[in-house]
Image 1 (spheres, one colour):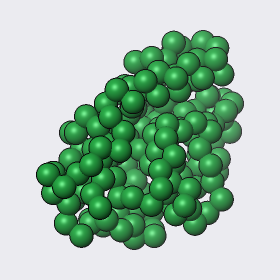
Image 2 (cartoon, helix red, strand yellow):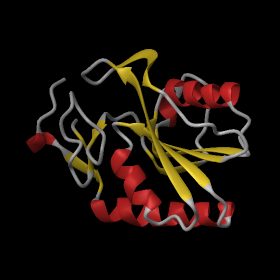
Image 3 (cartoon, rainbow, N blue to C red):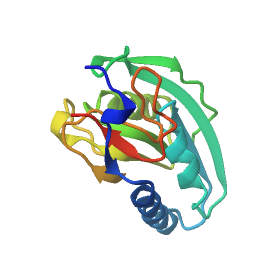
Length: 176
C-alpha cells in the first residue's frame, strides 16, 4: 500500500492531541509530585510527542534519546526489535519515564522495559505511549499512560511516518 497525502483522513486533530497531552502531563505531575525524572524518548517517532509532553511536566527532568526500530519500511513490522542506539546514563534509583509513539505488537515496548529492568534498579519505570493499538498486541504489555486507543489502522503524522515521510504533519491521519 502506498500512502499519499491527499488520501489521508484525520484520525486525531492537532487540538485533540494537544488537549490529551495536557491531561497526561497532569496525571504524571500528580504521580511524580516534583521528583526528578529521566524522560527517555524513543526516536524517531516519539520526538514530537515527547517534546510537547515534557513542556507540561512540572518537575526536574532530564531527557535521553534512544533509537529502536521494528519497521523495515512500508506499513508492516518486521517482528524483530533492532536496537539502533540504546546508550543510557546510570538510571539506578531514578524515576524513568519511557515515551513512545505507538504500542502495537508490544514487542518494542517489552524489549525496552526488559532492557531497563535487566540493566538498572530504577526507583520507578513508567511507560507512556501516544497511541495504543491493543488489537495487534502479540505480547502482554500495557502502557502506564497513553493518549488514544486506535483500531487496526496504519497511522502517520505527528512523528509517525510512512517510509520517512509525514512525520511533520500536525495531526495523526490514516489512509483506507
